[in-house]
Image (tube, rainbow, N blue to C red; front, side):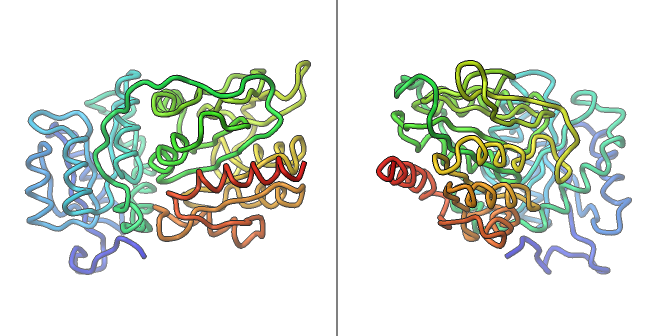
Length: 366
């Protein structure tokens, strides 16, 4: 199922876009980028969140580009309304000049935004045209979104209270490796906090995301979870009761260190067009942990993680893929199933329980 709607399409088959930004200059630049393509056409613009909600109802655009920081009703509030009342793909435009901006972007992705495009030089970016291809790529991805899957979980979240980090410590003898891309922050916010604090494993996470945003993602998951979540650092030992998020711009692998398994980061060539990529992590987990590992492929475009999960499965580990119905985009899980590395296909809400069950089963076999 895709999000395309014949009601929103204009003559000639170009998909309709509503552009929302409080800056008239930014509305003009974004509109020019969208209209310059053969695939999309701007059907209207809005100056803030309240205006956006009205225009969504009046114009019924197929896709919305939504600035985060706006007066009267900001992008986060407007997104919450759109996804709960009149869901459709939304691409956020993020200035994200600091940690607070990064955190707002993560919140938007948790609420159901398909993707985000970073404004290259702040809230008023005179050089926005430099990210033209990135914006069009995000709009194309939005047309593949399973809105039903987004709608199952797209709801305003209240930041959870801080929780005590509990569970076994020391060098990890088991690991869980999780791969995610488009729709991943929302999926990770469901899976990671649902894992038990006493999970007898370390968790390694690859989310396709630029540098800086991965730190905010780790901090957000840490606040939600009963164990410690950190952005990974090169050489860090892998410990039970800890989760490690691969930093944007670096591949993450596990290697043998002086005191057991540890993390190795590198800035080698992109894999499947992304860095970090999941395949390098999963292959290294297969080599080092084999049957003592569980691999998980969540929502996302492309096929990253499929070959790595197959390698893990061939080494005796177990594989889980998110199902089609709850995936924002089913590309990565579908590729993982087709590659033959998946033992279970689960709805997103069942993934954490499946991880714990497979780890328990491995412990029993051992």
